[in-house]
Image 1 (cartoon, rainbow, N blue to C red):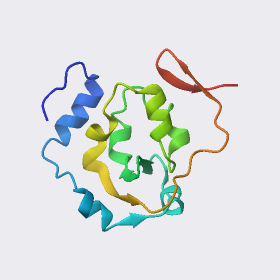
Image 2: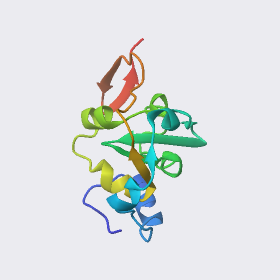
Image 3: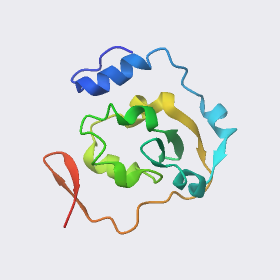
Length: 129
């Protein structure tokens, strides 16, 4: 995958690693419906699934390439990241970056982390204390 303008080095490394990867079609993904409960079972850095706009992703291979590290996103392992990515990465085409990691479609309404009190500080999501 070619460079897309100004992309963080870590993200570009990920894109380069997955440049030849097959991106599953919507039809292929639809053949694998996944419940929010199943997504939630994959809530560790060593086994991290998330949902984003109705698609489920195995985000595990991407975690080491996230430009801000894992700390800002670890509370979202096993949950839906649609709202948080829109708030923090509104300018980033998240779906294009993680497309090769798509594994299925979300069967029902997504789960979001309970009572997250987050704010944006210098482009990085942090928990309020």
